[in-house]
Image (tube, rainbow, N blue to C red):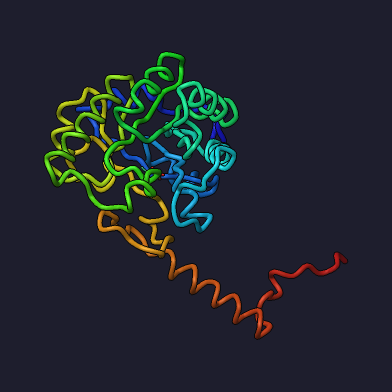
Length: 273
Ligand code: KIV
């Protein structure tokens, strides 16, 4: 049962059915308290491997492990009542074989109770996606810019500018959809291509840096809240600037501790009479 009562969460089937009728709202989530704030407003919550960069200070997502994803998946599940929760399979936990992917996905689903997994990859992962979906594992695909490939891609940049690049992303999206993914993240892709892919697929596309043409949008929650200050990609809109608020609060606390103004009488226990 969820932390917030017996309300049923949205399922991957209901997310898929939103295509063409409602725009899908997705954010990343990593911890229970923030999840409780996101959950009432989101359809999908993604426990992204971006956790490595956002919470652990890693430079890329490559160092994230399956155990880390499971720990954060469990934390997020404790905070949800409504949103469908998907957990990323991290680098190295599924690329070796479809059997390895199945074992990793089963661990994630059994140990977190989440609704499905996400994996990065296009045509080369289609067989794996079909293997998983035909064995009871809902798969959220991820094409276009794929952060786990940073070391072979030579960095991050928007994609789909050349016809050759666009054709590859089109083929990737189609292959993953045909293999049974319930929805597909399209990342860092030029608008006309994102629009064309969205129109051609029967399953929803969830864009990140892929224009409003997608069926839904996802952002890294710490980016949109202004908590992650290392860099701000062009596609991020900050809906709040929590970083400076946190700094100010800590500065006030430090000043009050040093001056002896905190704790005040109302924060102090006195013996009972
Ligand atoms: O890891 C992540 O947060 C993601 C989203 C940005 C799509 O994959």
